[in-house]
Image 1: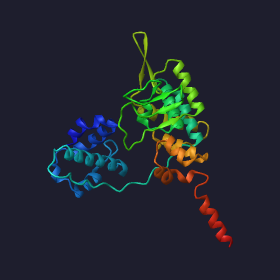
Image 2 (image 1 turned 135 degrees about the vertical axis):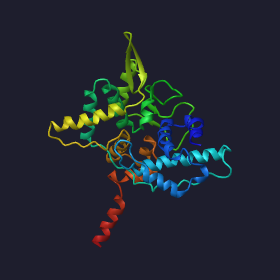
Image 3 (image 1 turned 60 degrees about the vertical axis):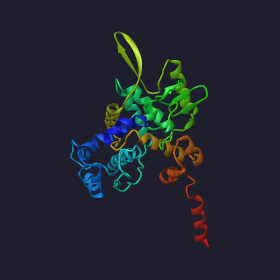
Image 4 (image 1 turned 180 degrees about the vertical axis):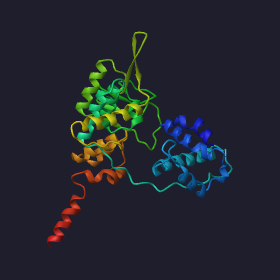
Length: 308
């Protein structure tokens, strides 16, 4: 069922690579088990035995939850397609972990950008990735697939004429991971317009030289460059007697940072939800306390009650 899900359904999703990673982790444990054997006890055993291959440390509960969620989705898909008799068994998921609140301070973001500029082969496109993340709050996969002024079925695009960011590829069906349209800020739009005049095709782009000829290509992944930039940023800051700990910072932290900075600056919650393609519920639950007006009415009322 996992193999069928990977081959028949994953290619049609927003992030097939993410499904592939989950199935790669699931297969060693679940690959020889019959669907009828899927029970809560087996799910809990999988969660307890899931460890890093290199370090042997337990995998985070959130990661295990996503993996088992993929197993559940695969079974439900198989049932819907008529490959199972009856309904799909229920996969017992670990409790949902608390939402991460890690976001970059202005100083941390500045050091990360300085480190990206210092990298040789990965520096330019990693810098562009970071800036796009900080200005638009888009997810990693969305940023890496962004074209400039060219609508595409493989990725979203930035319309430099009208100043709009289209996160969703042409013709793609909307999913839970919202990819709405956003109006870009003047400063970031000016940067992308300069890139367009210089012949750029993608927001995050790599220049490849072969037989003396240069070609531009979309960047598939930034994992190695990101890891080097994190280490370099910490080293560069340490030389200035600044202690920097970015070990828990991931590309997704850029989205958290963009939303947090916007709310700290007093952005309207409704506009922020639309701009960052994030539900009002998530915005209020995870980021709401960063807004200067958060619970203002209640706290003022409580203050008046105290005086009485």
